[in-house]
Image (tube, rainbow, N blue to C red):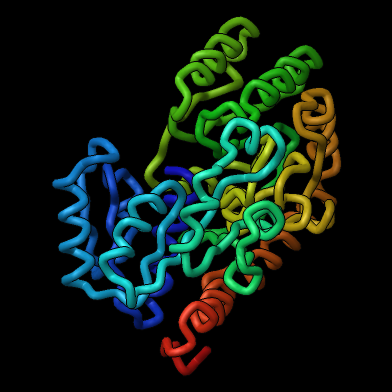
Length: 355
């Protein structure tokens, strides 16, 4: 249930609501997010077991042939099979949604050199932040006209309420991965407890790196945080979880544009984020929320205390952020930019008259 998976669901729902025919194909497992696809959207599960799974690829080929799409929209690592698939359907345009955050560490660990060869079969790229767009143009010499930065958008059903309190009710929505900053967050929790600050923290997300998850559990136990920190794990209905919180956190060491940050805005939460990826831009450099440096537990703890003690200011920022997200990061704004990009990739495509 990561950001790429959420966006696959959100985009499919938005396109379907706007009158487009949509088919969703999942490579390995449906997962709990599948229940949030709109009822009339067909969903195919390939049960892929390995890269050279010829049975699964034949099913992918057959479903694509029967559906006869104008565009194939691939997310993340599904681009590799999508490129092979595109060889069988030369008139179908291939769009890749690149969700990977870009920094020196990422490029060092995953230089993605194969993309220099594979890029010739990609008709268009959607980048989730400007850094990814710049990286493709600068380092892979991708056609600047065929890549577009389009913001992620949330798709939630919420009952809003204005929230405040002297105790800190905090939610952190991020899968358990090294770069998501869980251990930094727990170090800040240790500081809060040493200062006798009352708080409740709920960690929501899937275990994608078991070593990180085990270190989180160990840190909670060693620092006697069992009463303050709850490891919720993955949840099906994120909206109901956000409604319980006052503060939403992004503690990552690197990011693209986390969907959770946008969801915090829709849920009218007070937001505290590290200065990573597109988070400062989304928060307008602090106008709509609070920013601290990554891997800085002392700053994180101090800012949480500040937010608790300045609730009028924090609520005002939260209300502004909610209005900002609703106006600028909604499905309608995404579709407007998406349709214009489709026209670039294929000038002959027809888009709804309302756009």
